[in-house]
Image (cartoon, rainbow, N blue to C red; front, top):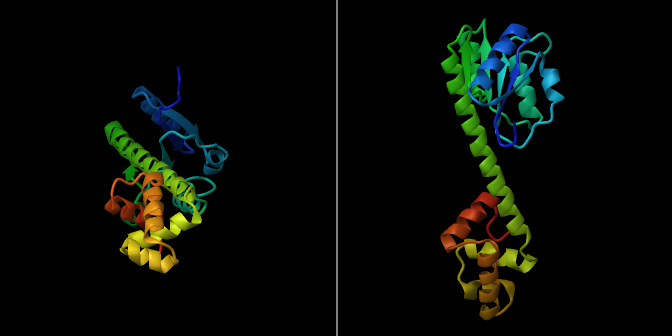
Length: 208
């Protein structure tokens, strides 16, 4: 069976029976599942390019789930987290959710509640990956611009007219028009409004 493209649910729980039960549940709905006893074991795993999420027990023997969540954030590992616990309390759940957790489930929980949370987490990760891919493509297009084309783009999105840009750069209006056309083409912008949105995503400073 090919696994490429199939989302993966990672499970971290020191209870072997719970790990296996969650893995069986996840695989029963056609998803991949990989289980670990500790956060350290998970950190040795190389995450793939497919959407994924993490089902994480709050109480672990070495590093608590909340500490592990913070560690992932500090090291730049972005993966949606669903917390599970047999000893949860409201302050703990609030802290986890404020730190970006998708859900906080108290054992024993209904299978469907966990599956719903997993689907929500996978959708969140898929959307984040799409945004990252779009941003990467946008940055590549921008880097393909010449230095002068970048200057023209910055002035165009600042609202200057071609003749004003020509004055700013000490060149002719005809030359600015050519550069402007190249910018629109290379950036794949269908309109000035679209180019402005791209500049905003790239965080270009006016007249930088």
